[in-house]
Length: 94
Image (cartoon, rainbow, N blue to C red; front, side):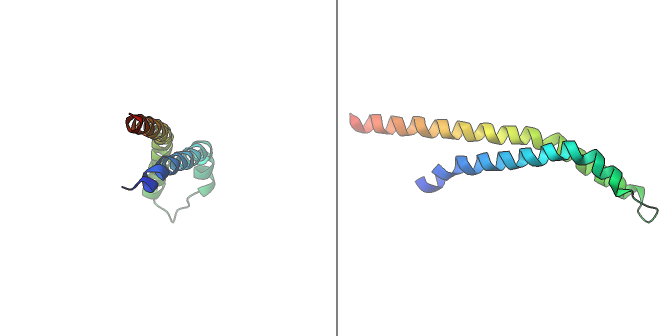
């Protein structure tokens, strides 16, 4: 991995964490309204309603913790990059 790719990785990870967090927050807020507004008629089986309910529950369950983990990983990557850069500069100064 080259330096340019490595330096852009924390920013991409942070953006991904924010996007996942926003999607998770909207899912938590809007999932009940979406499930009620679907009003699955008799042409749909109960299996479709159950599958959609499980999908919304999984999104609300996993997206917010995943968002926090991605944001934390981004911060750790930025900190380690600054520490390694400082160590490399200190090593070259000797």
